[in-house]
Length: 341
Image (tube, rainbow, N blue to C red):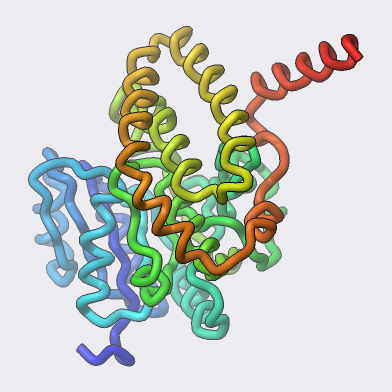
């Protein structure tokens, strides 16, 4: 396949996607700019893949014999995109559907902005009533969060802008940038692997854009909700990896201290919700993996092209909007400090 003529590749990781997978593929086949579609199946036990093969035989399928998570479910498709000579590749959730102009809007942007390595879209809830994501932020507490999530003003983020990270739910990546910084980190399995990838893009000098004219509709948490304690486990593990790999040395320990406080509070709350064991396993798995991430950190930091201050200015210097318990703890700290000074 000629590189200049290769269509963009869309990669869908599937785990028992059922009807939602078929709807996702149908929305991609209806795009005004036709992609090459790859579905990577994470050892599903339902009939989603057999139904897909029967209804949409042109879709390429890559099969896993075990569940490799979101990162492991996308990477084989991204490697296939590189093989095909595609200039652009997009991960796409199996529980989302795209507006028919979604892909063209993102590709038009990247075609005309060569310094950008990724373009994120406006992700709305499936009922179109609330925002899911308009890109992701990373805070000086080591906590990422989706910009605008759960907001009912769906037109609040209608301006095209530069953002910190592109959501893995449905963003378009420049293959050249992926070849430079690497693909999704499969140790993350699921959650924050998209912020990790965008962090590496930022460090390497690539920019990330938010293109609001491109829209996707997403069933939030439909896949992860099938496994009890899954989100808690992955969050406790991956926040550590995201921080340790990417934060510049100058800010590593100040952000790390805040993250330690946040994770201690998260652990306490998980225990009260009956998910203490999932949280502890995630915490200790993350600590174990930190040792294996030393060489990755050295590589990432050695090849970065931006100054520390650039990253510092890209961060949100506050807690995520939904971090209510942490905000209360921080307010208590400042009140006690004022009394002692």
